[in-house]
Amino acid sequence: MKFLKSSLSVFALGLLLFMLSACKINSVANEDVMARTEKTPEIVWGVKYDTRLFGMMNVETSQVEGFDIDIAKEITKEMLGDEAKATFVEVTSKTRIPLLRNGNIDAIIATMTITDERKKQVDFSDVYFDAGQSLLVKKGSEITNVKDLNSETTVLAVKGSTSAINIREHAPDAKILELENYAEAFTALQSGQGVAMTTDNAILLGMASENPNYTLVGGNFTQEPYGIAIDKGQTAFLKAVNQALEEMHKNGTYDKVYQKWFPNSTDGKVQ
Ligand code: GLU
Image 1: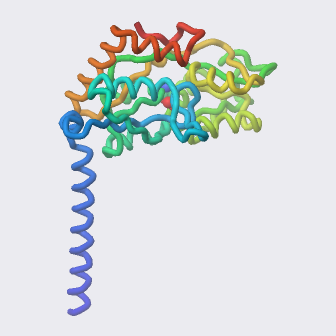
Image 2: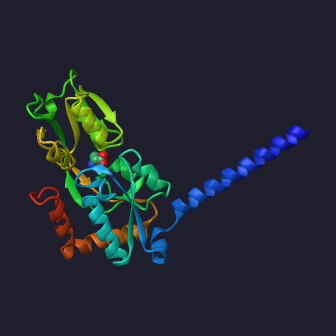
Image 3: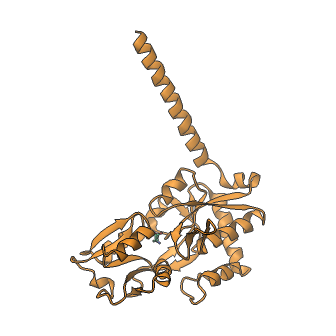
């Protein structure tokens, strides 16, 4: 009897703790972001930390840098004023939607393509960058086009990305090795675990610029319009983000940020 009683109280305590933690997760996830920023002028952005040109951790300054980072900073300023804080949290292609939906971040700005499939889980801002999927290979490679990827070849992609899905369609016979993030995928390419790596052209260009033995081949075989993902139900926040983006296009801020990261190109620019 005594044993039963104590087991029951342990169970009751466990249940209570579980309910309290569920409440906490729920309350953060359901919080109205716009209302919170009025009290505390801060936006928590989910960004890449390993993607040159978009979101890359600079180990010397311990600051994350890139086009996505600067756009996030400017949106924060435009929405909440010069003193507002843009806070950055690392996401990967695989973790970004779960982190958003759990309320760990307010928005994702991380080379993320707007797709119908993703729209079932999150809302997207207007397009803020136009990319397209391509291939990166070692210079002199026999692979010059996505059509060259056959059953004898392995192509490297990142989990949770559209690239991993699209490549199955465009090179249905190729073997695909999916890695956790872009740093790992590029290391796998360098060590010969695959003959090509596939993702958006702009991401691959960032890698090629740092590693002159590698080059993009075959042009783009998909369109990858980037959007900022926001949790469903945060309609006021989504509207404010779109208004900020529009204002940045009008007042030249978008162009300034674009020129800083892509000085030699007009690709990807959204007018
Ligand atoms: N833009 C593609 C995507 O959203 C590839 C880049 C990435 O993985 O973030 O999946």
